Length: 426
Image (tube, rainbow, N blue to C red; front, side, top):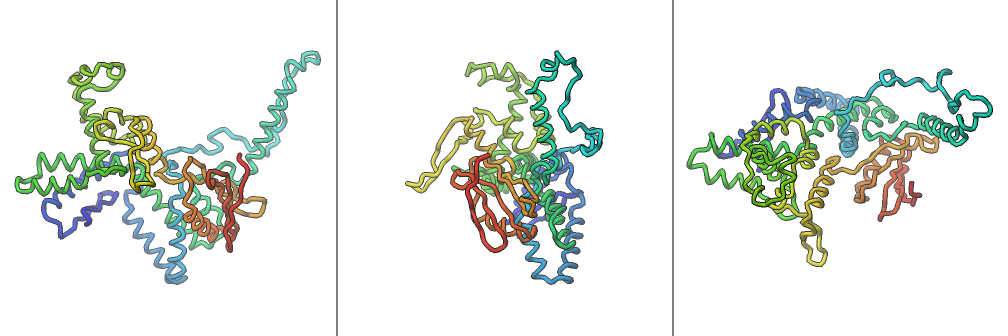
């Protein structure tokens, strides 16, 4: 059953399911107000296109023109390929201001004025070995050589925005390049929703519960509302409910800042009774949660505001799968492990870290991707399909440096067959 759909636009568009009873319509409208406020005020959405509905209509019109020109099957096949690669972007890129070479004060290394030899200071002959020691000259020469080699690489450093690299360098016709650009643009539009899932749903749940219980709820609707709300925030062992976690963490922050339960004095206090009754009357909770709503995303939200007391109160544990019982069981109650596990799931939206390492491998135009291994292996069946789709766009063989059974390996696809070879550890 679909309760709501809300679109980040200006103004926000939201839709109600006509068959829903009136209490559900009220709940959805209150929930949507929370989402609309979050879209408008959280910094993660600052770069998003506020006319994206119009932009997507434009995208659809362009796709229809390509269908008329090249055929539905051909366009749909290529569109599916691009969509399978839509997570190969740099989720942090919109928030980084990259300086141009001129702004950074860089100089063309091919310019005659550019130093290409180790710096040797002027010195009398008898002081030469002290002023210009051989080991320092050798280290300087090595650094210059590494800089020159870095310049010659393509790309100069690992590129996380794989779709951008394909958009700029893949040997494909313009209509296919446009489709890659469309998919990439829409991927960046939706990315902030992935990096703020807990905060966004928690904020919407916080405000729908406030609005419904304090303003909008009629007495006969109480039981139905409680039933539907509890279903939304229900939790199961081993599963993370972003609605519940976000809602309760906002409430916890509000209480802590209302009672002054933060700062050096609070952290230094080890007396259970004093902490239990701590209340400075600060009354800053509402102001604080509005500040948090504006300035954080899920990773920083959890990193800064998750506390041992919160985990204990809400029974947050880490789980592992027991093959003998075919069930998940608690593996740890340690706050550090719980927090580390949550942050690991949320970092990079839970996606593997994949970079373009070399766009001209062995000077043969082959593409090399690098998987930054974090202890979790890739789904090899998924990886093979992604390599096939990348090869379709790149035209030349594609390689992926990764790990297989914790051993360094290179997965390759040349357009006809898959191979996997061991590689040396770097």
